[in-house]
Figure (cartoon, helix red, strand yellow):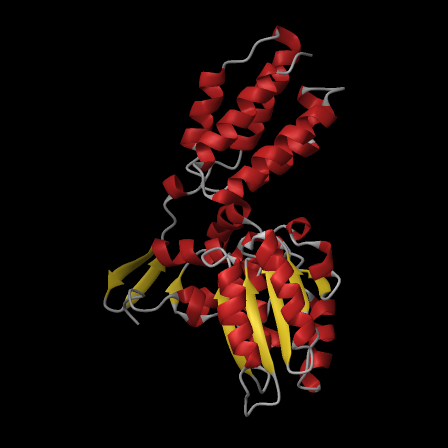
Length: 314
């Protein structure tokens, strides 16, 4: 093969069977038991970005004899979607033994939409099952959670991610050094989707139908940028000063569009840079991590958090 231009690797290698889904062995056994009966319970799949929630939901539907409806709730979050599309689908007769509704990114649904969905789940419980996915399960109202089996998608290990990426590269006959996958996995873990997308963007046509992987280091976030931020914050313990301009430049130079790892590091290591103020830091992190999911400028959002941390008196 000489080009990947017409082949999206994420879609091409989206698993259609549980044995191809990376990680979550215990969860896969549970789901397989449902599939063997051609029936499922209502499910709420939650976990971080790129860990396979949507893929697993689609995989389940693919292996059922059912009619299905897929809705991305980040685009259609209002009560009208639930009343018109979901209820309309659930109320129409089907020649299949089962109907399944996938509500992707259900944590974007409004409270009113979630309340309406709860009623629809109860009304059509004999014929229709619901699979919801979300990043933040706490945004799903309790009455809706109680009508689902809540299942956490655990990220595969870094070793499993690297093994899967290596397998894709081999399938595509892309020449590569397996050691090149280490910084890639470290950069985007646990987001397997981003890793695969980066492979696609970094594959070069060498001519004569030869493809090889050349990772552009400029598209990878420096693996130590988080340490740099923490070190600057920690230095304030000694000098009682820290330069926000320096921190802002580190964030800008990171080339990152996802600061989940930095959020986690700021939370877990808060005792290093603000001992005794861990609770105050946790509240700030929670507020800004919530805002990050509503598509505001993520660089500005994380920079604002860091400035507020700098403003906390020791």
